[in-house]
Image (cartoon, rainbow, N blue to C red; front, side):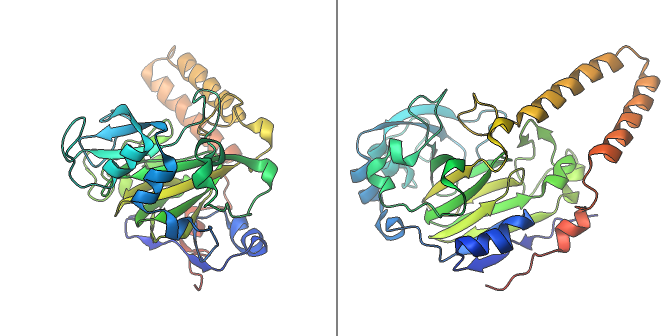
Length: 329
């Protein structure tokens, strides 16, 4: 089935905690939330204000000569700038000062104090700016994992990937297009780890990626002040239509011991999933001892066994495509 005709992400307005918990969260599907209070940041966070409040704190940023960043093939370099200088450069279309080219693109994904051990927390890394941002109370405080600054040059597109925690993307300034794909379309996305190999999702190379047309595409454009609920495991691809500032808030919706304790980014697979994937690699190594025709036969038997034991059959693709994706604003 060809699903590449886009479907709009449903939009809800004036959502409070009770409405989110009752009408949105249980569906486990993306939703745009409008007119949810985010604090004075929506009006205050101009380039000059951000530069002044963020100050000379050094930040590590992605710099790419291309507007479509590719994490698999690393078409970018990491560079360190003071926050005020970074913000001003990221807002420019052409640069007088640059690392690679005058039209290079910038992207900040903020980090914890010790990036190898500590998750990002806006309140710790940028306390002056955190005062302007109100985290929506849609989860319990003890579930909080991280709040991540995301700042993009205009035109910057980031690779398609999934996260293992539920999250809210608050688009504070600028407009951003988000394309999402259901976890049930994982077989059509040509995954390497948590990332899709299909970089150009608008005009994909279908000779190389013929199955991609079967992945159903959900799309929205976030305006300043909008929130996007992205449930865990939903694939997403972002395109900054303008210079924009966002805050991503992640929380632990599974029991705490489900997650890797040494994961400051919140993107490692759950502990049980990691063990299962490691066991699969060992199993595939054992199959290599067989001739190719036997290996093919027993691999197919294993696929059938996985389908019968692990697939969530009540959540079929048809249900994802049609159910609860029309909701009045």
